[in-house]
Length: 301
Image 1 (cartoon, helix red, strand yellow):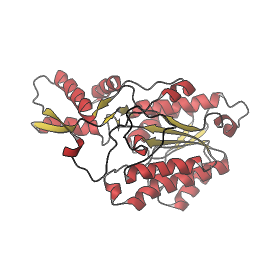
Image 2: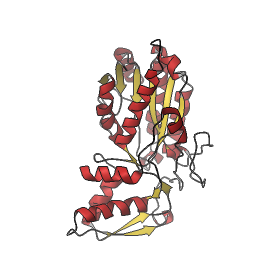
Image 3: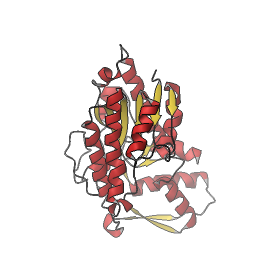
Image 4: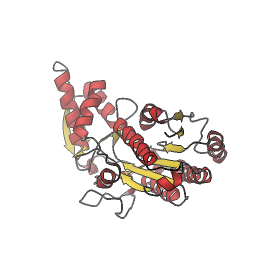
């Protein structure tokens, strides 16, 4: 249905899953980082003009949260300026854009799960650069779906789960932050959701006019794992599952600590919970409960 899809960030956690998930929707063109350089205006524009995609799916991002504090120009180049150019080129060829954003666009001081219309207020360079990307895409005139997510992990790549499991096998005790609240999100569930959203929009395209179909859906959606926990809760459940699988193995004991006891260059939101009711109501899609997805990911490790 989707004809040709240009996919960025294919070597990343979400990009790798999307490469497989989107294959049933059309021809997936997934250039390497060198072929589609998000820091190069000419690279972005030439690639899109040469590929002529119907959809551009952009999970690529500068995600080094702490490093971004010292590299704001690079963070903004990839997370904001590149997104603006993608939007401009998509508008010119009437392509649709799917872009992924983050819970870090909020300050984390709220006590409820954030809805899409809540005021933003990033407290880090990374969060600010991602918010700037959202605003750039919204202002580009391209039909777009922006999916804010949180705590992404999977069986491959660099992520919290794999780091904790490795450390649990190597150390006697681990200190894990227990006062930051959110929901882990499986990269595969996120990829499946994006493919489902594309199918949903395509079903409403009666006259091969994607822009008209997308005008009914364009906007920001929250898409994180169902339920909520803390980093300590996430780690505890993962180590508990590992103990069940390796009863004779020696694994670390976990200690709950406050954020203040684990200082980082970039401030993290204390509340990263995202309300995903709009996603469910619009696309009839519910994200997996984080415990269920964790169980599936653990089975792959």
